[in-house]
Image 1 (cartoon, rainbow, N blue to C red):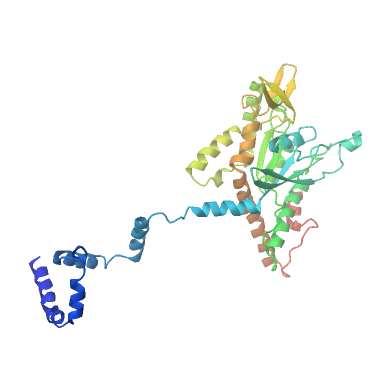
Image 2: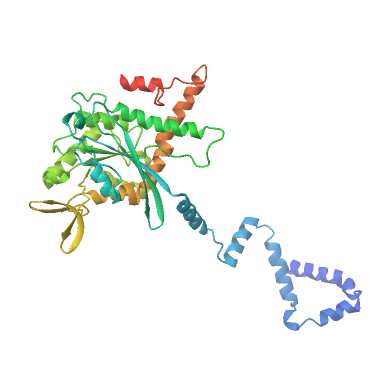
Amino acid sequence: MLKRNVGVANIVVGFLPYFISMRSDIWSLYRNIPIQYCLTWPEIITSFYGNMADVGKTPVARNEKASSEFGYVGIDAILEQMRRKAMKQGFEVNIMVVGQSGLGKSTLTNTLFKSKVSRRSVMTTEEERIPKTIEIKSISHVIEEKGVRMKLTVIDTPGFGDQINNENCWQPIMKFINAQYEQYLQEEINIDRKKRIPDSRVHCCIYFIPPTGHCLRPIDIEFMRHLSKVVNIVPVIAKADTLTLEERNFFKQKIREDLRANEIDIYPQNEFDEDAEDRMINEKIRAMIPFAVVGSDQEYQVNGKRLLGRKTRWGTVEVENTTHCEFAYLRDLLIRTHMQNIKDITSSIHYEMYRVRRLNENNTKPNGQPAIHTNGVPEHEVLSHEM
């Protein structure tokens, strides 16, 4: 401490001749400074050593200190910017419904979005009622709610499972899904590609299981085993009001056992849980799958309220009442909680696997172009599925 004081004294003595030789007008200017703005010698020394102590600090530390001292910066405003941009662009979602005729696929889809987004099949003759092949039909609607605009595309697959021989009936659907990936890939690698590539990729496939009350049929197992590798599958028990609660719980348990036994990974997949919170939420969902659902676009008066439901001889089945069926859980999963995640998994997992495979084929082929099936599916892939 003594050495430090001696050093300061030497500094003052050294500069004293300079101060004395300064012009009188400068001294007079100094004398005119109000006394409250002048520093005492102890304050000058404290300030000097305080500044010396800051020499070792990094600019980052100073900036952080300045940020906290000067208050709100506004970084969180980026969320509002992203929201406005998303609202302007709108959203796209493509949902495929697969199942035998008569399971209420169109009715459930209309109930989900509370709109006529899917047309019922109108067949006049027995021959027309059972198509000879699977026909894949798409219908798009723009739905707007509270300023949010969404383009919804529903892909129906009439004819699936309606034949006497349903062997490999999943192949046309597999080819269609891969064809959408191929279309997106060609747009993506185009030199003059569009600013926003139209997305026709299938984000989710709702698979309708008939309410047999026993176990999964071979056609159910084969379809989900193959398609779960290329698309997010959400299985549902159709027309669950035809089962008692005991039959429904037994059937759900048998289906989960069949899924595990055949290593069928349905959505939400275990390996895609991002953190502990996601894992906890998704575990609850996986414990409820398959959802036992009832669809209806008819409203009935129940206890003074207008509710969607199905009227039976013993009462009204309320579609959105979780004690009657699990439609509300399915709606929340597909729309309210996991819609964006379903799209992200499609883009970052399923489409990415297809893209990597196709680009590897281009690198290994002598002419740089792999053999392509007429619907956009690589030839070797079609052959492997047909074996």
